[in-house]
Length: 207
Image (cartoon, rainbow, N blue to C red):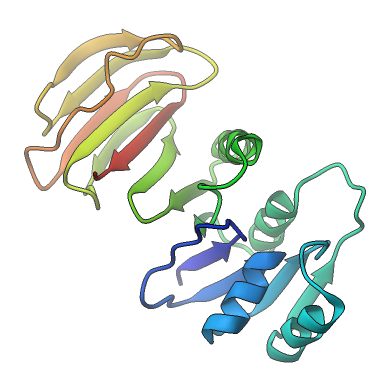
């Protein structure tokens, strides 16, 4: 079953249909309510919705988790924790781009935290899909056919191999401050990524 977490970015984009287990985060739950998209759970402190809007959310969800305003984690992380507790290790997340930049950075930090635990979080907006890979061999089917970029997060990515792209690599050590792998391009239906250590942020983009 696919898992979708919907946050409340001002430029929220969603696919035409969300199949599977859907969680609304704070104002994202209101967006789902207004768009008539069914969702199983709502999570957040709901400081961005009115009392009447919160009642509308409560009326259409099976589970509402109301968080305190002052807390040590973001609403988004609380939603991810909820999904992980429910037994899922892969999820799609929407509505974390297009708003405050600090929220976007917090989301990438969150993705890295859970990648280290074997949890794959795939962030999606209208023009980008991005996620973090752990060491090993990965076969990717890019959803955006224009660009695919790679960044080292936190530490160097050692012995990086890229195949199925316009600019392949063979045994390259990609450091955190290295932009060599920006704006590569898929040239095959499958892109193969292999590396020995580190954490690799992959960004698939279109213009």
